[in-house]
Amino acid sequence: MKYFVLFFAFAMQFSFLAAQNLKPVSYQDGKQKLNGMVTENAGQKLPGVLILPAWKGIDNESKQAALDLEKEGYIAFIADIYGEGNIPTDNQSAAKIATQYKEDYKAYQHRIQLALQELIKQGADPQKIAVIGYCFGGTGALEVARANMPVQGAVSIHGGLAKSGNRPNEKINVKVLVEHPAEDKSVSKEEFDNFILEMNESQADWQIIQYAHCGHTFTNPESNDYNEIMAKRAWNHTLLFLEELLK
Image (tube, rainbow, N blue to C red; front, top):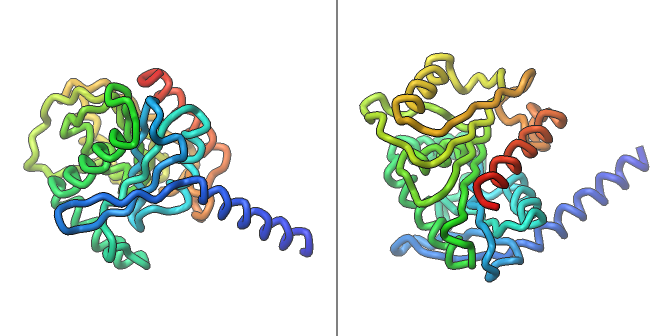
């Protein structure tokens, strides 16, 4: 027990110190202040990756992804979708504000576009940019593709796949990778099938990888759904996709 406590304390300290390698970046949407984070290699002419965090905003999973991407030679910028003063503190408030942006997808796309602009300001090569998103952010990554934002690829990691039925399926030029937990109860079979139909009708370059025996947030070490083996595979698939498009 003593050794477990010491290990846990060390791990928490390491996580805290690692997070200090990310620099805060403030940017604006009109009068709304947004607070993102960028890797320390900002300012260099490097490929860039925009990270869209899950429904509670910037979290440990998005921070760790940014640090890992920096090691791979990317400038990573974590977006602030909600803005200062609007960050949810519990699941109920997170569900409410995330649903608001899912329904008002134009507002979601706008906040993502602002974050992309900030990533470029931080030195990322505008010709070599991709977006990855977790959960709510995974839905955002798909909105990047649907809006044909000027990026090479979008990765949706256990993201919601559905869109409103009154939105037409238009041509998608952004390459799409979906990393989908096979036992994700938040995505129905109908939504899954409709997404494939959407991708095909949009003539997209798309792929879905399903991960066996995985619940919704299978990549997050802080989640009860965490599956270490499948999470590592998913991350390797993400890196392979980014390398193909950006290097």
